Length: 149
Image 1 (cartoon, helix red, strand yellow):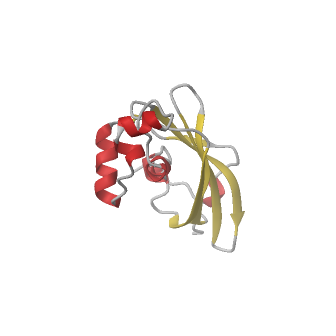
Image 2: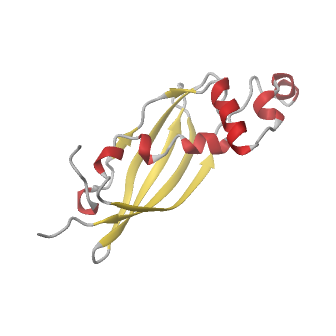
């Protein structure tokens, strides 16, 4: 098991990356099957071209899911300290198309201690292969402080 991090170990500005991923048609099909979202922007190339897009657009929620903490370098370090995922937000700043490679990062933005727990705010970002920001948002977690012995 990896070294466990607790709230006190989280330092403002610390960056945790997730593996990059090239978005494929298989991701779109799986997401549509999971959610029922079958808007033509995601599946009909001719529809997209008629509306000014060069390729099919990735679902916003699919993009947001790529920022999940569980896929990041931080995941194995918070098994003992993570209590709950409290909230998330996202702003979509650019399109993601089939064939784009996305690079997710989580950056510690705020650490707010309480008595035995605290709030951890992480800034979530996705950049594409051209280093363009395509998503920015926030994750908020409830974490344990280091146990006293």
